[in-house]
Length: 321
Image (tube, rainbow, N blue to C red; front, top):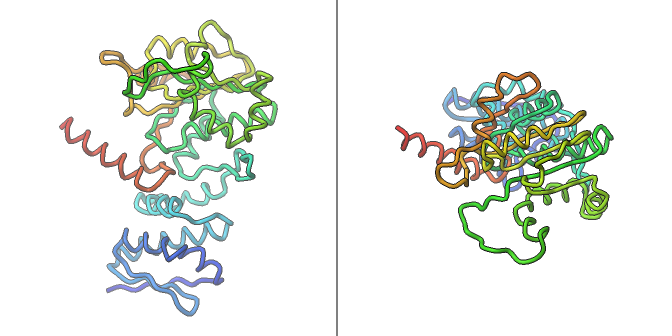
């Protein structure tokens, strides 16, 4: 049995590190099969040598985050564990020091929570067209909307345009009641949710009425040229080749496009190929266009979401094999 001691400078560090009912430390103990205790301003880690080393590195990463004013929760502990397992914890400082990209209507700063998200944000800032591909819960749409709102507030663009194909998720919903806007709203609800979080309902409604923010089905994009705009296409895995080409060619001067989607959740009819999958291949060597692939390690929802995604990926590989 190997033991390692870590010095703690302040009691507040210990409280934040352990979390409610020691939940943060329990997560590390379970991950590495070690025993972690604290007394007299020190943390003691006991277990197999390699596992103790990993647990120690994870704890030191979390302490570094606490010292930078970061809030430690289940998601941040999971991210640190993934970085330690990958041997990439040296990148933690870059993640902690990431600039706030937007402040929500409730005053909460929006920052990348994983290295994959940081790469995604940097790609959007650098390129005219960015394609974000990854599973549910990786923040593809939310971060894109945050950057769009940031650009709109800074007046680098005059308008935000958000769109998605009106494709049912494997269900036949029939005819929806109401006028045209009410019929398409259920398909666009996730985009509204992100905008409400960033702007607040009142500010959003004001901008929407002025035409500064437009949320519309993909079919409404045909025939338009979008200048001075930040344009987001969500759920792009449900576009056809023709729809994707139509959308991308709406790009006007001083505009930026972000395309997001999850190629494992395609709801197109049988025989239809995803325009997103084709676009990733067709556009890969064009300057000013970059594709960023997020993974289960970038999931920032409940920990089980990442586990569910990994389980399905494992099952898919087994079936293909």
